[in-house]
Length: 78
Picture 1 (cartoon, rainbow, N blue to C red):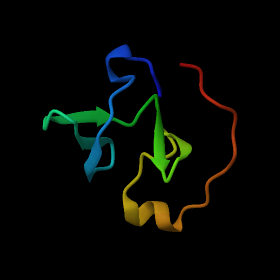
Picture 2: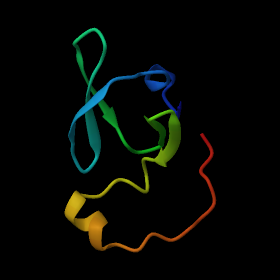
Picture 3: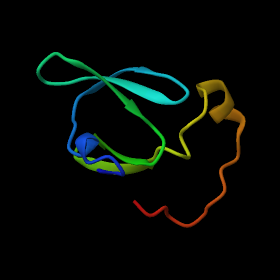
């Protein structure tokens, strides 16, 4: 949805793998793109409902995210 690097904006696809600092996404053209999480706002659509995920807040391993309590802070400027 938003990024400091404009080439990442508008990229759509299916998340193939999720790592601590990046997502690997398969695009509609069957290409694998590696997208960093830092300074990016992702839009995830499920059944017509769009949710925005801030990559900086999501930049942890899955096991670390499950036990961490997230604090509400202001939004970041991109």
